[in-house]
Length: 390
Image 1 (cartoon, rainbow, N blue to C red):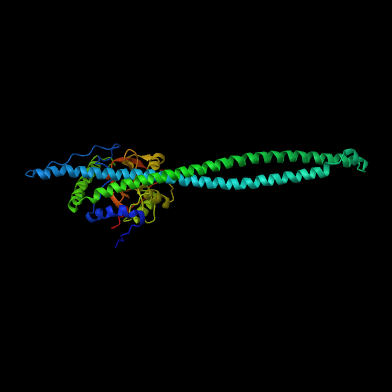
Image 2: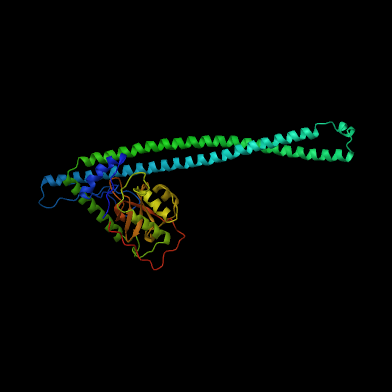
């Protein structure tokens, strides 16, 4: 039996619209209607023609329902775009804080090195004063032999050279100390700026979620059911178009993942039923790129945090060669990502108010595919993982 997780804190506004979705099993994608496997967002599909004998009232209701679905998809997509921007800002802030901490450690070590250089230079200066401060003529009069005298001058000469080296080390150390001080301050400034940007992005996400909540709050149960039917029809049509086009190759269910890809897919399956929460990367909730990045991290292959970074940095692979574990990236801005299961399906964290689930691959307009493990061979004698019932 699956466990329903009760949202808390700031999640409650999104959870209220999630309850409406759950009541009617609504599964709306985060984008406008789409054509499968195309790199650009298509225009919304026209509303279906009314059946023969239908009333004028029902004919006028169909376009209104299509417009409502389009608005809802737009709000979801805006929320997810803002979520990815928030994730990027948060990740940048994390990296800048880590850099600031690293520079602080270098700064502390450099302070010790400079203090040691000063101490060493002071000791050498004291030694030279004690051993070389007497006039050489007085030293000879005091009974030193010429051999002792010249030997002592040789040692003092070497000490002078060492003192010069120590002075150079101290000068360089102080310069490095000043440089690290400047770098540390800049790193802290950048971290604060990134944190400020993340806070602004958070407000953007919340504003878009309020739009979704407001739209859903005005719907009746019948409208929710009608939206579900319309959305499901769009999904089925897009999926048929994708499979009929043979864009996935002749045998989309016959390719095997690498061992790491299989582990990533197993991790994603273990998260089925967990809620979508913007900015989350487990263990109790996920956003879209939080799920994909954590799945591959648990497979032993770290990848970037956000969908846009995953698309920009990971090796791309043609759709006709995708294998389980590859990442399917959506929308021309690369603002959504899912993990390929095989046979035209993906596992994803779809959008606010929804849960991690297995979906048709064409549920959103496809930008392309990337492979986190291009150098790893496919498993031999691979048997596809069964999709868990939950």
